[in-house]
Length: 449
Image (cartoon, rainbow, N blue to C red; front, side, top):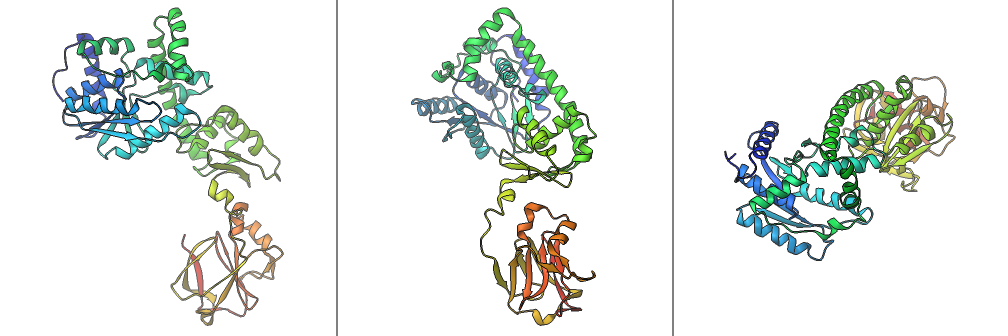
């Protein structure tokens, strides 16, 4: 890091440098930086400062959302400014999907960042104190909770990358004065004035009215975000304890969940539904999960769909299934019967998983190896004489007793030869049937995945 910054207000310089040094201590040695640069005043000032602080350790990236006729020329401007500062620059055009334009543009932007970030790089963005305050206001108006009101972190360590916001304590007014003193060139995006967008409306219409009444609102909201970050950190500790007590990322024990207070139940369900996604479900969706699924009648087949997952209850447990898992039965082939030939130590792939044909103390006769065997989907009404049990059982009853999940039962296949049942492939393994082909020192398919 260079020892000096370009001349500007000494108080700001000391404060900014102190903040940077504290935050830098969180980064591994030899960390480099990828600066997201839109060409606006904030990001261009950040680009200049980083060029002084970390020469030869930075790159810049301009994301062209292709939503403005001048967006390509803005990319050229950023590229030229980077060349003057001897900073490598990437210009990446993205396609923004339809829907909420602000959200979809953000998603496209971050996907582009991920595409270009190197393993030793941290993404650096120019969010400042007013951005933080606006984020808090907008999230408050959307009905968010503690995590949402935490707004943005200076150093945000995410699953796929780390994000650093060095200017988060710097006011918009300071940035304007600082940029003027350093003669930082920038472009103006006219969409920033379009109050059809929530953030522009907040900045140009709501903000002046509130600031007129509360002159120190920006600093106060900044403090609130930090207090909420503290509260969220405490809440995360409680959530981890509650999740460990109640279940896993895939299922929750409803009896144990009921032992928690209503507030802790609601928080755990919200965080559990979020999973690895960026945002939690809204309050209404969590309430729907409670009333429509958890508290539905015991014989109900209730399921709730949210954000590419289905949530459903079975045997006093709540399950989180992917879209593919839940819809697998509907997307299954109509073919009822297929044939297979098995050799010893051969992998067998069936609907319920991957099996390996191995020698077993009690198993199927070696005479079946290499023969054409039938695999038949369960139709209902079948009976099975399970080896080691007395008499035949309805297959349905055996499945229920084994508590095989209803959404997995379509994968159950009956193995047979000449209408003689040899056994059943299930998600819990192969069930050997008593038959003339069942013998000591035989072989059996064993579930491996």
